[in-house]
Length: 274
Image (cartoon, rainbow, N blue to C red; front, side, top):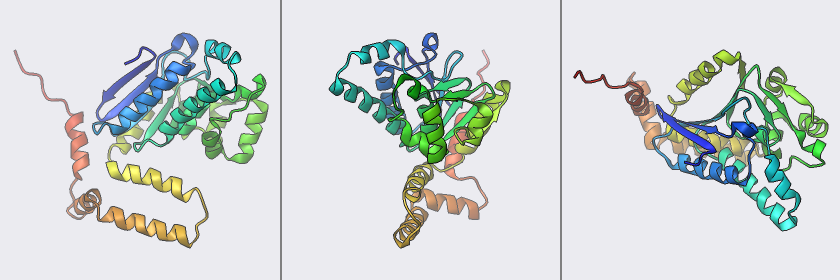
């Protein structure tokens, strides 16, 4: 794995840590490419049931790297378009992962870092977390992160914070729905682990289908076509192997097989005596 990322797997959970603390985990074209590759790889990995995105050092992610910005300053339109598409593709890959994704936000998340948080399904933040959409102060637009930030906080509030570039503290980020929950710094890992404890109890296929369902129903009105589509979706998942196992386990008052899988991984075998 590249030095700018640390990927660990624990109890069916993958923890992806941005590892550029010397630049507050700011990303450049190399980190963007590596993140895209890692997200694709983890989505294909059947041993991973959920993904946590975290940052090393004092910040979660400070947005764009200064040296990368210096290079971009000399780019023409086509080179800028290529770079922007790479960032947009990375965020799309994170957003469309079939597995639950959790942002662990322990400190500042600025500019593109806000986009990373918003593209995750769930974001848990420390009281020390803060956010800022700084692009406007550089005469730029938060274009590539906008689909995820607008979805998180709504169009009216996005207009305000896109236009002002104000710093948003953890409490306000929770009110704006950028954060799903907040906790004291010393309790952040416990809060993330408690959430993961719920996530790994869900069905693998159910997670993927639920994420796709949310995208579908949030994209349009609850008209006859959407109602018919939701009926089709529940009928399909009820007759799927995972759906049948889930129903059977409930009726038989036992744990479904995917919970047994998690428990088998979580419990370490005893050490052999020498």
